[in-house]
Length: 369
Image (cartoon, rainbow, N blue to C red; front, top):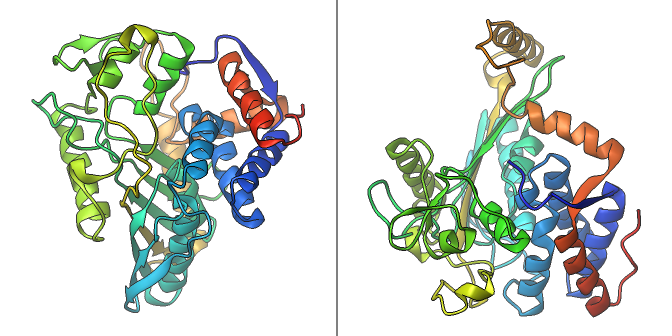
């Protein structure tokens, strides 16, 4: 479900990239870095992951403007071996630090067969698939794990003491569309609930609990409460493992200790609600990037042929009633990307107003068609 898109205007991806990059540069992000961060959020919107796309721009600009992230921080190598490295993001932009982690992981995998790079003292980095796909472009299998601020209760609880901890896997293929899995371990990303709240929409039953522990369709009550783990105890268990890999192992914050990136916006009728506040202090987010060199196991061409065979076999299987085809992980996003690259990215009227406010405040060129 896409929330916040009932009344929307289509805007070309190129125009959005220029607008985002200009906005970032006006709050102190160097030009090349601004282009990269802009690309990560526009790519998310192109792929239909609107919760991690252009909707994040106002939040990023606010946090950068208030000094919550250091736009010029350089990630530093804390320690490394032939196949591993640990980076300190120094409270810089998560996108910059994670792209550097990808570069190191790929380089190590090229010689050692696999490369694993942990990151600590990082920040919100957008959609995890962006980085896994960077690895896959190098003819390797990419795995990316990240923790985040607490938004989910453990199975059986009602207090948000852990995150939904997203992770992504991207796999190179031959003639078929690349397989890309990107998911958080909650029924829905909390950012989608925030989008629904801003758009004045209800959320589906089963997404979240109120602070009293009751299932709610009110996005504002959900923001006061907690999202639910996908698959109940299974999603909770996987989220815990991701936090161990991205947080505990790397020396980053973990569990309830990860900082909140953005203020939580709720409707006026809930103005007296007490919510976790973004203090704009360092978040201490942790990531783990793993690159697996296919050539260490078999020739890339053979692997890709085997992947194509696997995909075709799955897609040719018998369909259940009510289904028209079987989609591979990431396939819908590839199809969405093609459509939005052609027709433009839909931007809701409420988000357009926020973007226009940013334009006026920063004194940049209007958002073009």
